[in-house]
Amino acid sequence: SRNLLLLLLLLLLLLLCPNGTRQRLPQTIIIGVRKGGTRALIEMLSLHGDVVAARNEVHFFDWESNFERGLSWYVSQMPLSLPGQLTVEKTPAYFTCSQVPQRLHRMDPNVKLLLILRDPTERVLSDYTQVFYNRLQKHKQYHPIESVLLKDGEMNLDYKALNRSLYYLHMQNWLQYFPLGHIHIVDGDRLIEDPFPEMKKVEKFLGLSPQINASNFYFNKTKGFYCLRDHGRERCLHSSKGRAHPEVSRPLLDQLYSFFHEPNRKFFQLVGRTFNWNDTTRFQKYHQ
Ligand SMILES: *[C@@H]1O[C@H](CO)[C@@H](O)[C@H](O)[C@H]1NC(C)=O
Ligand SMILES: *[C@@H]1O[C@H](CO)[C@@H](O)[C@H](O)[C@H]1NC(C)=O
Ligand SMILES: *[C@@H]1O[C@H](CO)[C@@H](O)[C@H](O)[C@H]1NC(C)=O
Ligand SMILES: *[C@@H]1O[C@H](CO)[C@@H](O)[C@H](O)[C@H]1NC(C)=O
Image (tube, rainbow, N blue to C red; front, top):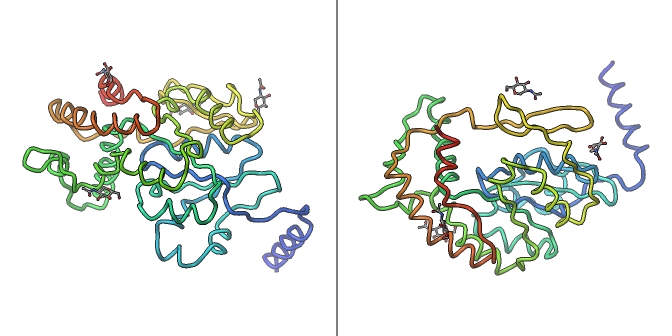
């Protein structure tokens, strides 16, 4: 039948594949953070001809049921690559999962890590929004944002999404296994506002030839953000921008920003770099 013929053709193609085309362990991993812009980052990185990316989030190091399957399973989740090409996967949950750094270090102490971060207040709201919409769509009950963020008027540290935005906590864990030089931090807020300079830095960190250029990005005025142009093909990334955030009162917003002030300072100290994470005007710009 036709299907059989197609299958045979596919097998033939596989046999004729140039020497060295196979699946490889990733040499680069995007470790997070959830709602930080990991999808945009991997799509933009894939503009580079020497990069091949796993299609899905693999969840190897953070899900026990996957980890137990061993490295051969992990490799089997990777795309085919040529020698010299870089294999990359992204699983945003890695950054905040405490077992991951040690496990990853055991696999490859020289792996290059990419971490994309954004303003922790915006991140926690975005994290809440995603869960909120999922529940709304399933007609399930959801908790108003005040009731999850606050407990007796104080920030509720039991709320996992809040914990995920305490970047210094998680970073301390990673730095026990990897030197800072192995972890490149992408400024997620800048990547959205002006992707090209951030992507040049990523290219350099990964030791890739300079291929990504300014004309790979163009600003779509209707959408209000950048889209990608790849060999004439244009595509815009999915964005939750159109999705309104649930109402957050001004006092709660101020409380969030001041809550993160100290954790952010600790993070800046840890990585020897500062980020513009207390710009409340940016929040207004995105959520008017
Ligand atoms: C926040 O997360 C870290 C790392 O997973 C964990 O060690 C810590 O106990 C958490 N804090 C709270 C209050 O849940
Ligand atoms: C930018 O890269 C694209 C391929 O991604 C190429 O077609 C184009 O010529 C490049 N432009 C410049 C100015 O190098
Ligand atoms: C810009 O965004 C609008 C709205 O989503 C879309 O309809 C249009 O196709 C986009 N244009 C380009 C050139 O990407
Ligand atoms: C943000 O924090 C930095 C240092 O902590 C401070 O110098 C700056 O004035 C703050 N900016 C705003 C808009 O609050």
